[in-house]
Amino acid sequence: MPQVLISRNRKKTTVPFHTNAMPSEGMAPVTKVAQLADYFPQHVFDGDPAQVGYPVQIPRYYLGLIKSPGDPLWRQAVPDAAEGETAQMAADPLCETEQSPVPGLIHRYPDRAVFLASNRCALHCRHCMRQRDVGVDIQNRSVFYEKIIDYIGQTRTLREVILSGGDPFMLPDRVLLDLLTALKKIAHIEMLRIHTRVPCTWPQRISPQLAARLKGYGPLFINIQFNHPAEITPDAAAACARLADAGIPLGCQSVLLKGVNDDPDTMLQLLRGLLSIRVRPYYLHHPDPVAGTAHFRVPLRRGLDILAYVRGRVSGLGVPQYMLDLPGGGGKIPLLPQYIQEETANRLIVKNFEGRLYEYPLD
Ligand SMILES: *Cc1c(COP(=O)(O)O)cnc(C)c1O
Image (cartoon, rainbow, N blue to C red; front, side, top):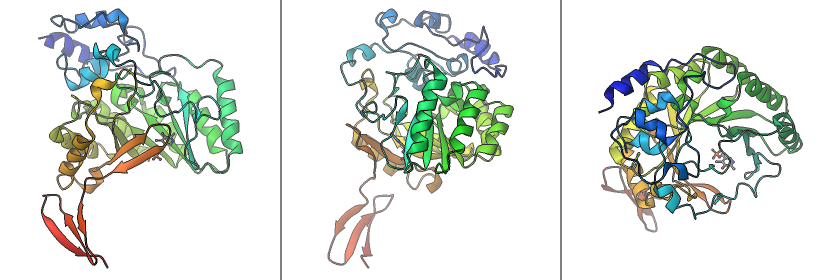
């Protein structure tokens, strides 16, 4: 149906690169459900769009990738009436706020910490696990950063800082580079990581200049969130190529989401597609029980079955670890399909990727 509108929208996706990481006028993201009527005139929206708790924000580029209402990209971007029904779950089940020694830093593991460098995102993912923070600007940014950098400088067990948010690529280039420079100056920080969705949701933001400037900060790793094969477009591939060509190893942290990628073949296509653009699947996150996201939940067994399915069908480089983030701040643990069927005094009975049983001596 709205094919014409979509293709017109597609043509407009060449965003001029901005030092201030916001799209120019006219390319401004969609922020009201009512604006979607222009793109999907026949769709009747469920519930009162004005009642959406977590604000809407959809880059025009990402909107152009949605083929029809309810499809996997739509589900990630457009509010669902179910968000209100499930709002009684916890806003912060992983207790990230309690594990923040200074505001904006989550320090859970001894050696690495998450620095929430921006509260802005290009796309407000409906499944966001940090929607309690996203969509507002950080006040007194330099003071806020200073306190975090002081803590990192004083905490010698830390070896790695993970810039996340929000999305660090929503910061102007200069702010992001200054932050990386300040962190790199700390002697005990051996490596840096950026967690982002921008190469997937607003790939034009990754300008050649930005990619070139990131070259000097290695070892710097970038993990991106792609959740569906339809997100692997020529634009996204080009953004990833700019980063990979700058010598930055790229990983992917996907979220297992009902109606998006909770299907073995969709997951297989996603993993193969990621390898084809030099992005290595790192984690497949089981969805966290965050308020407003219950309609994305998938049974654990289904996640394990999907993982067992992809093993043997995609390169081992393309099999992510299936991760459960424990409530109450217990940290992440990997879950594996049950390969060990039985253990006797001297041997294991194991199951291969096709479900066949084998014996293997214990020593
Ligand atoms: C996920 C997470 C990390 C990073 O974990 P890795 O397993 O190294 O990817 C670090 N700190 C917190 C609080 C996290 O939630």
